[in-house]
Length: 459
Ligand code: UD1
Ligand code: CA
Image (cartoon, rainbow, N blue to C red):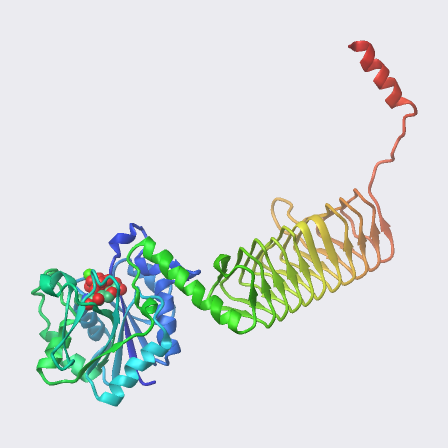
């Protein structure tokens, strides 16, 4: 689509009561402004210009590679667009203008604004919605024949018109040439002493340039975020939208209300999600994987038929048929190969656990390479850090690590070797050998009986 999008994101968002700019707040792990940019890009817009001002550096850092226009003082939405044109020059062709604080706007809605502008030759197409409570919104004014003649801000509305409920959502498609030609005619003679972009509508209408309003059938998509209450509402709506899409595609959710999935998550067929499952960032889940309850997975890959129960996974890669939890913690660089297991109270970081290898109970595995068919006994710890640097532990195929082994890295356990329970293994164990480090056990005959008698006498 040969269109430019101008996204307005210079405002402060006072009602958020936040040190962060409003559009940097997140909805399901993605900032509000990134949602809007993604929608514009998904609609096929060729060029995106974001107007920034309040805490501009924070907002711009969220959007690497985009074009920005600075609006250092915020004198209204019309002024914001003036700043955009100053920065990028006059624009020809369709110019989509979007509010940066409306995260649920859908790509198909943006496309429909552009298509309506093309098919009707309108110089401006406005997206409108009928809100049960229109308070605060600008209202679409139509003449007796239904033609749009202007937009009046709530604060400038005479009392008898307050009941009008067709609201301006703040998303438009302008003809670039008409926009460039008329923008300088805006005046700040209104209740807020701001340059209103919306005043262009009446200007266009009086000049005989076509103006249309497209009423959205999805009222939810047009809600701006002005407070944390609205942030929570918008999050709920997006949660429902995303969860329904996955359920319709073949995912079972035991409790969709308590399942939270970010937009960048892909789920296979017949995946089952138990209550209180959170999938954030970029997560991809294979067919028939079964996740949760009480599980948080961020930026990870989960293979088909894997099982993850009551665990936290950050930057992990879980193989086909692998098993995680209950209560495992997989940190960045944790890789479980096919059918591997990270069991109860196991923490794994920057390590590979080979095919069919098991770390079933109470272990810390950091900076290790574990081959296939390895059994790591309960309570095993890789001592990977000497206080200065991290070192690797290598465990070759078919090794049996006894319970409560301390593997003092750097150390290598050769293929098929065994370590004795309770050993601190600080030197390499050759293939096929037993590595054991333990003081001799002494049994003192009759000791227990003698102590019991002694204790009785003392009483
Ligand atoms: C605007 C519309 C109103 C519409 C409402 C929908 C105008 C004059 N009014 O009002 O008709 O019903 O949106 O939510 O356009 N912004 C800037 N620079 C500025 C002012 C605003 O970048 O100088 C940005 C804000 O950061 C925000 C967006 O523009 O992302 C909308 O601004 P906001 O102040 O929320 O507009 P409203 O007064 O709500
Ligand atoms: Ca305002």
